[in-house]
Picture 1 (cartoon, one colour):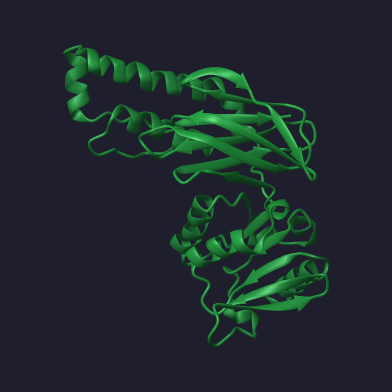
Picture 2 (cartoon, helix red, strand yellow):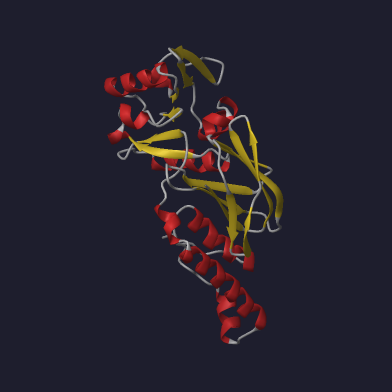
Length: 284
């Protein structure tokens, strides 16, 4: 549950609060501002319309409660230390990766092993500072088998002048940052990794955050999009690794629509004609 009070909210602000929590698998505790409460008591038409719009978003979220059970989708893993003394910094890595449209999954430091690492193309292990001997070997083996490891200076061979150094390791590599700033790491992930490595890449989304989940055998890949501008965004394209048979977008702002598919070099592309606040593309 997400508890937050919005300052001077508009109708769109209220609906976005519902969407923002729901798209990431949570629920927003509805908190109305005093002005809206007073107008609702007086049954002012504008306030009643805001309440109806907010209610439609809540209804949409609860009618798709099954989406919360889908596991996050992503080929990038962030290793988090439950015992970290810098939880805010860990949160910053995740927040900025989301803003940079990098789909990711979490790996607890206590569950770091070869089986967990095998699911990924890249591992961000900057929170392991320093890694234990066992963790270092697991990450080194992952890189030598073709993976990419993002490491902190304690890994060794950190550069003196450049932001990071890339150390070849078998079929893969280890990137060692001199200063693994969360914003720089999130930015560089988009530059270093290919579209196939990322798995899902959106285009024309300057004001949109995406949340991808599902995609395991037998379940749809769900990409939820939340727009943070106060006007609609048009012609959003999603490029997804693999071949899908169908795509459908659902939104609390209109009827569900089937989307045409385009295939290119082992990838599937769909274009969303228009997004007001919240939409969810289900790909089978």
